[in-house]
Amino acid sequence: MHLQVDSVSKRFGHGSSSKLVLDRISFDLHSGEFVALVGSSGSGKSTLMRLIAGLDQPSAGSIRIDGQPVRRPGPDRGMVFQKYSLYPWLTAAQNVAFGMALQGRPRAEIRERTAFFLEVVGLADAARRLPRELSGGMQQRVAIARALAADPRVLLLDEPFGALDIQIRETMQEFLHRLWSQTGLAALLITHDLEEALLLADRVHILAPSPGRIVRTVTVDHDRGAMGQLRVSPAFLALREELACCLRSLEPATGR
Amino acid sequence: MPRSDAARQASRCLNHPWTLGVAGVVLVLLLWALVSNSGVVDRLFLPTPQAVLKAGQDQWTSGMLVRDALASIQRVFLGFALSAGLALPIGIAMGSNAVICRLLEPLMGLVRYMPAPAFIPLLIIYFGLEELPKVLLIFIGTFFFNALMIMDAVKFVPHELVETARTLGGRQLAILVRVVAPYIAPQVLDTYRINMASAWNLVIVAELVAATEGLGKRISLAQRFLRTDEIFLGLIVIGMIGLLIDLGFRALMRRSCAWAN
Ligand SMILES: Nc1ncnc2c1ncn2[C@@H]1O[C@H](COP(=O)(O)OP(=O)(O)OP(=O)(O)O)[C@@H](O)[C@H]1O
Ligand SMILES: [Mg+2]
Image (cartoon, rainbow over all chains, first blue to last red; front, side):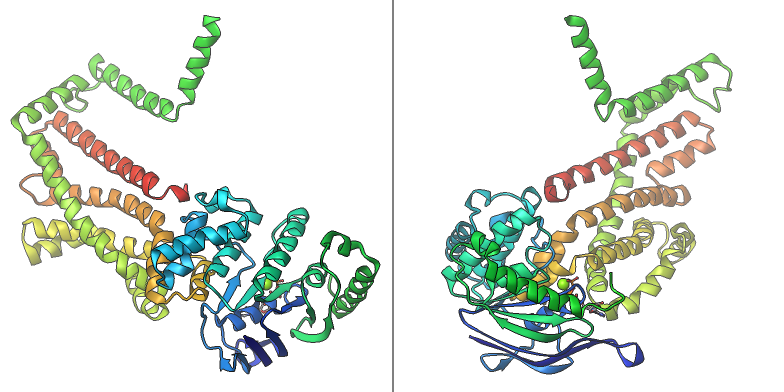
């Protein structure tokens, strides 16, 4: 799998009231890679994710998967949304099965894969619970299981842990890292949390706001074996501080 | 400590959601019995509860009460089934397709404000005094509200839910059936419950104007013979059937849409 984002721009509106939200974004993502995009709120992160998912079309530039241009959403790109997006009338298991049922897979296979992916995200016990009976972290894990069960080639994660409190977020980051290293999927993570990006991704792109554009790319290669220790290791902290400075300098002077 | 036990039981009774409601009804009934029996008001204007009960017994034994009620209920169900059945696809189409919505919404918004009873003369000219004009009146009086309220429910289906289905490979029809329909189901039931009340009102209005049987017809006949006891009876029966329908819808909603409660 090879995802190519090639000088993609996005403009909302027409004429004088139009607004350029993304300005010539380019990057690549191959199978087995984990890439993160970091930017402040309003820098066009979700917009970019929607373009890659095929939910919206770029104004200029192209997005290709293995050379094929992306025109519409498809099950090859599994998406986990920023906001909770579980179907409230379906149980956790039915939510996981949802995509597979849409694809018309045989029942026995759906049942088997549902059980498997609930197990993967550690929610086998919660199979019969409704989303409102699950905590925020559990809900996002079900959403991830649902995306994985549809057998995507790349996992698109739009601030999947943005709504969680800090402790659960750390557990979820470790969970996501384990999941990624086990499955060997390609993952694209969008976040405003620099630490999260540096902990999880091989490559981190820094996005400047208004219009959203990539101003810096860092390749990260530290040992993620012990994530808890990595968080406080001097090299990690130094890199994080340096990039945080870079992000801060990008904020408009009038900003908060 | 039998005393505190009794007190606890009493307070549990008081906290039951129905206790106060029943108390309110009983209070009004008591007041009615007191005033009507005291002779302060002319019996002709305010019949006693006993007289109303007696009228009810008479109509029950003669079979008239059941016949009237069935006639009214049948009209309501025919008219409302037509309205609900058509409003569902049209409301969904308007809610999910901008072109259809822009085409129909102004029209429906306009017709909605024409009082349905004002259509009665026209309906009588077109269709005479049979069942059809009454059924159509109920249809006219509820269809536009049903359709517009269903349209709103569809418009407020969260984008994330629809887009998630699209990223999982769902096409339009599948999304309609698997995402939109279940999401709006509780609101649709509630819409039907609310508009059922106006259907029930309209059938009585239609029967007051022209009918051979029905609860409304009985009331207008009773007026001619100054039988206020029968008028009271008719009003009470109409109210009770309406309440039962409402409770039925609520029960259906609780059972079929447990996730939304
Ligand atoms: N459909 C749209 N029409 C017009 N403007 C839009 C639309 N979608 C997004 N925008 C604008 O694009 C900009 C970027 O929005 P986007 O949601 O991509 O930001 P984000 O980086 O995901 O922010 P956050 O971190 O808050 O999620 C915002 O200024 C927003 O107002
Ligand atoms: Mg966003």
